[in-house]
Image 1 (cartoon, helix red, strand yellow):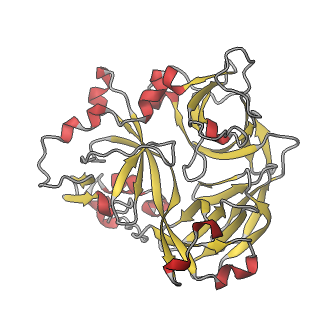
Image 2: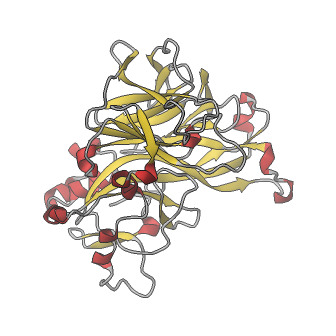
Length: 401
């Protein structure tokens, strides 16, 4: 069945909206609750204690979308918007800055009708929202615990959820759990300076030296790429169309990125995974693609320059948090655009065609719904014209019937 090969909820609602036959024959998402437990472990890390642990945090799904103007309005020079939708511990969903994990959230309520808008789903992962302690809260000290750094969850079509995550603290092991099975540690696979992501519905992980593995639905682990020869200091995995890309970032060693007298210090090498030969193949260009590197709880993603309505691709957008050594006390997080054609980076704020994509959401998205009366407390949500149902965003863990 075609619907069983649809992994994202927005794609499923679009599929179901085509006709009543497709709607009645499609399989609804089985995992309506995108809230999962992740172990909250004490220092120092001991793999033998994971399944004896009685403290947990809860993680929930966040999604990156590109909202494009309706086709009949694209001649009005309306800009698209990148948004990140997250759900908090109280079940309320909010719009957040798509690249900053502690960035601004949009404070106003409005309705998003995904059947009337052109929506592209660009990426998703999970982030921590709440704690669950089985002991006296007075004994809790946040400095004693290792928190999840990045988590991905595979949840589709009746299968047991597969959770793959890594911790913020050394040795930053890769933890895996399938359904009701016990947690286990993937041996010889530290994600310190590495990354995890979903690619074609499966979790992939890379370590600092470029060794890459894929985790199967039974939590088995298979090598898909040998380590790089040499390489940079931080690795980022990015799904780009049908390919898995690796961004290899070289540390700037405390260089002032805004110093005009210095030769451009930013170096990011790009590779494409060749699974048949189990190696990373270096790219000379991204073509029409633009990469967005997200650190920690924010996922990395890519988009076409034509979809973003910008002049050209072959660029990487990042913030200075990706450089581990570039974190002086009290410094401000800044975002940059690296033009790979010119080999030069610029402040994102100096490039309005890019900065206007990110924050706040485009004004044209909001006014079209201001005349609608959704009651006294307007809520963010999705209205399916075909199903004649309004999905409040409180339930919008991106799950639809």
